[in-house]
Length: 391
Ligand SMILES: Nc1ncnc2c1ncn2[C@@H]1O[C@H](COP(=O)(O)OP(=O)(O)OP(=O)(O)O)[C@@H](O)[C@H]1O
Image (cartoon, rainbow, N blue to C red; front, top):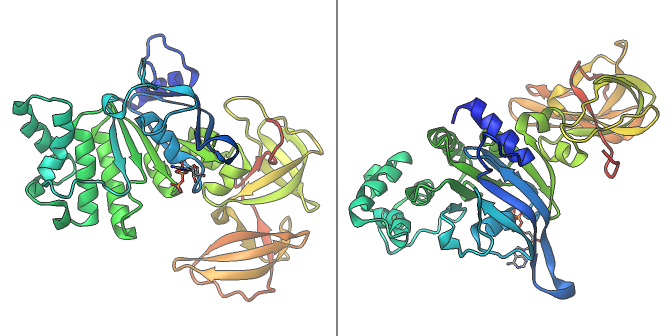
């Protein structure tokens, strides 16, 4: 699907409009899931709403235990919602057994059948879908070719590396030509280097399957940023924010998303005045300019004299000499060399209880206690509502 029509499909998925565009490939409609009963029950999904357009990739991102896998399981049919429903296209599949939902599912642990050869593993889903025998060979070859595993059809899973096993698991999911592919932390079991190359392969796969909607569960923000058209951020069984990766990164709608996606610094500030999307705020008594974004849905009124948070990414902070005009006075309180950069911890003189992270190039050996000036270049500081404030 061309990018423009994907954008239109996403817009329609968001608003639920039909018209000349297709229904969402995936719909979660106020889904609630609990494990156990009574007082001891864990509410794993609370009023979860999400739509994914045909051809769109949405990453479910959140900390451990936030309910990401549960959302995927509710869609796949592995857990049953207490209330609410899930739809695939126009079909309500809430009560269908997993095998009849026609989804491709890839999980972290590969879950290949150890006693079956690679080609037989890939053919498994086709057999259970009663695909005619004559077609199975070709479909298996196509699926293995898509993941670069054509030469391995006769091997057993134990004769493959972790990355190769995960490719076979993806081929098995793709063989049934699903309209919707669910991936639950597919790279989590791989080592760092392999994860990076598999991430590139997943990007290529995504481009090769322009009509397949993907729901990708991860707790790794770099995977979400690399793969997803939109990111749905989860926390404590709820959806916190959903938007394009770029919007969530540049204009985080909540402090949680700001901190989770890219580890932003969050400094308390007081709004002096806002004109359009441009704000003047006070940070520990010093005036600072910032962006004052308006969310796509709803409105944030940045009222004068109200409290807010200033979000600044560690790479977007500039350190200057302490005597430079217009900078915030600060002192270095720590530092960790990370190879190509050093992450300094810097405490503003007016706000010593909120040290900020600053990434500077190379090996920076400024000792603790060094006086510095801190500047937030234009566009580097963005206002974010305080937790719990209405937006
Ligand atoms: N089978 C189960 N029985 C009881 N509680 C469960 C079960 N599965 C998950 N939970 C609980 O439900 C909540 C959500 O779990 P879920 O696996 O969906 O989170 P997650 O965001 O995918 O976490 P992770 O990133 O660690 O996989 C957690 O509190 C978890 O402990």
